[in-house]
Length: 89
Image (cartoon, rainbow, N blue to C red; front, side, top):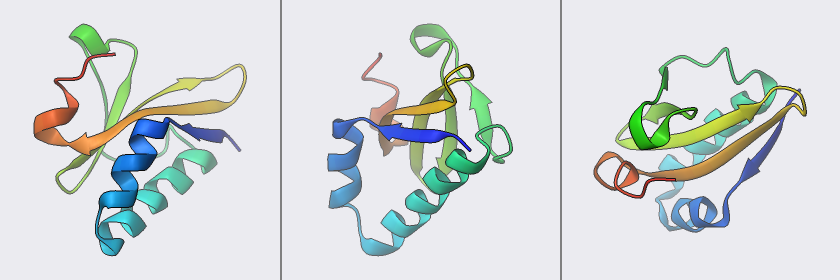
């Protein structure tokens, strides 16, 4: 089991979403806690986001990185595709 730590910016965005989208994203976050490497649609990122991974849920992207030693998943950003890649790290 991994601990999932969600950045406050990501939490604020999540709270603004409709309930059905919140439910989908919370499901993915829960799955990250079980096994962050077993989720489908996970892609390694490049450029400014090198070292991070992203998972797609509809039009929303969840950007995260995993500390394997401490067994922690850090979710740094949740947002729509258009905005999520602009913010950098």
